[in-house]
Length: 241
Image 1: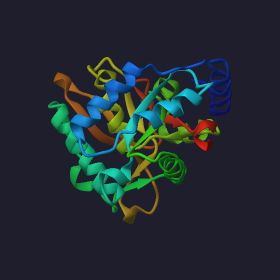
Image 2: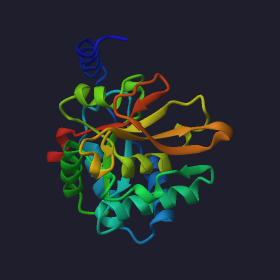
Image 3: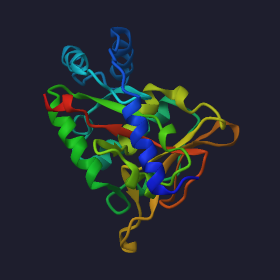
């Protein structure tokens, strides 16, 4: 594996070389809208606003996808309640899903990294309706690197995705992890650690295990494996318009 400085430069070069014009088709928007209306029928899905935003995007980082997902504040009054709700929705949609951290996804263990929290708040304020648009990098860009390394390799406008929107991503794209052969991904936008320990040391991840059971678990921030990538997203200049 390349050293961190060299690999970070390679990632930066890759981003520059993978620019492409992207126009999301109406059918994909309708597909995501249908999924969310089945899950949260009372939320306001402003298709016109979403299509107008997507029409502005001229240059999108390569190897990324569009995710339309509900605002955290549209789901629950606080982050932890929203996480609990979206995980329950995931459990209903995917019977092979196992959440081994249910009782610990609270303010004593689960934290949002400041960078992710700040950018997600800005994106949320950009949209009037109950849904936002995220530009998602599905994990392969950082395959083999630990979450601690990923934190140092992020592009200036890139941030780690966390458990709420990582789960939204799997609700829209369950095919992302279908078998043990598929790349698992961690959620570098979160820190998972007991408050008493005083310093961050674990990351949440999604991985397919034996008999195709999808696991939400945790491992050390410094652990890297070719079987794991990191889910991230981009803050484009179009959010400022």
